[in-house]
Length: 247
Length: 307
Image (cartoon, rainbow over all chains, first blue to last red; front, side, top):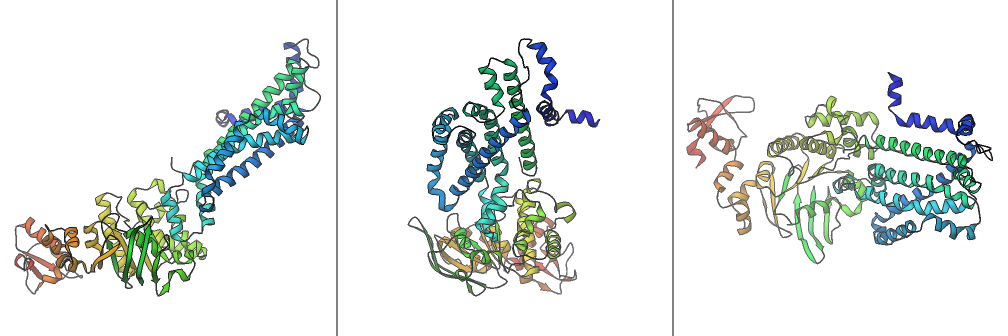
């Protein structure tokens, strides 16, 4: 019974599949040999997939963390009385960040900061601020006026209202924004491998350059699974946050 | 308990509250009554400093409200609003505990207080403590709203059209509840409404507002019997004033002691309108009256009603 119920939770078995492929891709060597008899080696071997994943994760975490901090802080700022005048300006800046495709940002930042992970982190950061900011704004502005008024009327300070009332009520919306930004960033980070970032995109571009299809497939499958698992994790967290709130 | 001294407030050049003065004594149930947009809610919100006043002074319990931090002031004043504003992410017990926790009451005292208040508002603690606001009906939500406002035992309760959004049956029940709580706790209440019936039912004193000023203040009976001007006369209604008078006078005013009559007895504090209603239904002109202990002490007659 329990086993059947576990199968109904895709996070568990997709997560397990992802972990297994990360650690034991070489076990599939016979399969790749059979499918691509000409390709040797059939398994990407310049780096372990686990190491590629950890580097990929670090880049996404750095960009996502920074975009979350900046996006949420900006949303909080422009919804305070002192920051209301900056609302339009912040909206426009975030839209500009979103308007530059990450490839363009990479091209522009490489001359400035050189090859490596940094241009990718910067590009993903700029690309991630807008969805996080927009969702955080929607969440904060969705807090009912009556709730705010009651909180103030009972003697909560503005900071207490923010921390105990507004942020918890906006949390599901904020998390939805982070989820979008991070999931997109996982996919987009792969192109960072063209400017020296080490990611799961590295085997993809190596494979394309050396005309080795197995490398491309291995990288692409892992990136896709990484994005799906992350998205499911966020979905579970979001469901947890929303459970207590009215529909 | 509350003194407003020539208080004014303007929004964009329009005077919403105009040099208004009002004193509410401790223990009074004062109803601020007036049409929409007359400035009555603004008056209430100036008392707990949700709205700053432009001119004049407000004192609560003798202290000028600007002399202490706004948060300290608000924690001493219960505040109930029409849309309730319960915190949707907190269960009933945490909502009620808001102000006691801000005041850093010890845990046990907070727990005890939550139980007391739920019982005071006739909500079974075993059922309601852990419920979330969206699981409650409108009437239950407002009961929790009132419990939350009373939580830290404030000397003063400000209520801004608290029962305007619930259905008539629930509204009547909530009105009876708040009247009972006022009697048993002797809190000072300042209650804003545009509903004359509600004002007559609850108030020990009514202040009628129009265009930012108080046009008449007095006992409900005085307002009905002697309207100060045409506005008040229109507001309380030309027609049906006789019935309203019956609604604000009690059986005790017209009691004939010592006499007796058949049928179910009325309480001494029942309004005369209820006596008239009972006479009409029972086809009689005499109704027996009983005191608080259920002793029949006299009657009220039709002739006395119209005296």
